[in-house]
Image (cartoon, rainbow, N blue to C red; front, top):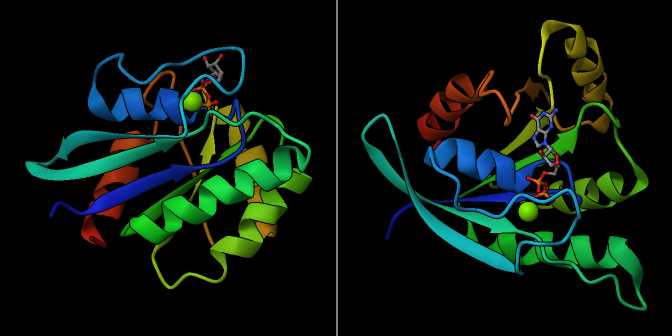
Length: 162
Ligand code: GDP
Ligand code: MG
């Protein structure tokens, strides 16, 4: 079976945009309205000639337990089925309480976790990305799913750990 990379994170941080960037096509549904992606969608991807699967998560309908529980539940399932995790945070918003919940879960896995600071569309945004060191997940990797900035370096790194 192909190695599986799961993409987890709050709604609207740009998970699906990142999937599209990696696939090089507009396939994962990106919406201004959070929660458009259904629970989990798997795509076949390739980088540097190496095939892998990428799992986009989303589609949270905040129920009685609220958005935190829904995000956490999705993250838990995705972490279980993958070989590496991309945890996406919106660098323009910074770390939220929901992000902290996901971090607690990510700390429990031995799988490689990559902290992706998305929406770093230009160099001025890099300081905000660096502030995500505070999450305690190691180095935040600044990317712009929208423009492609930083994505190639990140994929090189992730594939080197698979
Ligand atoms: P998801 O809910 O995490 O899958 O987020 P989406 O991929 O649907 O994106 C949510 C919103 O963030 C959309 O309006 C995207 O256009 C926007 N977005 C995603 N990536 C970037 C980025 O790198 N830079 C900027 N400025 N906006 C982004
Ligand atoms: Mg999505």
